[in-house]
Image (cartoon, rainbow, N blue to C red):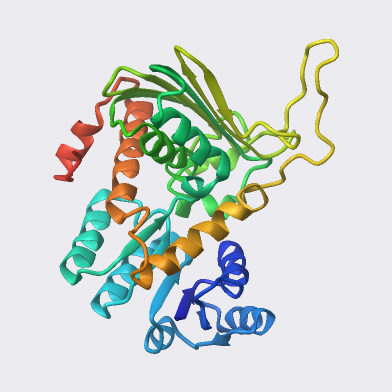
Length: 339
């Protein structure tokens, strides 16, 4: 299978390296807004560079989209019109209308669109989902999720990211839905911006906390921050009547126990998401190749990405207005399917 990779930035570079070693990928064609960057990456991984995205799409069997978010929807639509299976890093777009428009194009074309929520392919998250679905935890009453960056992103990243909730916590929203099989019926969100001034200038926050209520009354807390100097930290605790499981707790989790004799800080804490989820990203791309070849079902459709985005939009509205918000309210305003 010939894969077109659109976007040669940080995540595109990682995906190019992974795809070059993925079973079923015979050739890789790379394009970027900066042709020189695409050419350099292509040479590094033994691929071919194309001068434009259109040129890359003209001679491939499927496409992986890792460009800046602003280009995602247009490229998804172009891939659908060319009848190409597509993988796209989240989100489809930063607004619901544009997201739905792109998904309708995919639906009309009858093509495959897999969204990039790599936690679905992480060994710990998958084991927790299996245990939960098998009833080993009993009735789950509380879920606690943590997403913490070791350091803030560059200031220029914020305006194109959609903000901390849409960029980071949306992964937790997807993971909670995927793990539990339940929908979020209400959210309440708060945020603070006591860090660098560029967060306030972008209308963003550097730390956020969200309370989610699921449709079976399970309570979920999800927190995120751009300032976690101990290292990159992604964890999820699932507490049930019979047992309690935690994802992301290992000898590299950036935590220090306050208990006498407890574990100290790890020698090599996780540095960032690419290192922490290396295996998950590779498994995710391998799953896309199988799905694009018709050998497996789509593990994460564009509509799944939309539902996580609706929850994020509800959280943003809650943060701005200081009140509980039902995702159905946000979906209804935008005439978005959310059920």
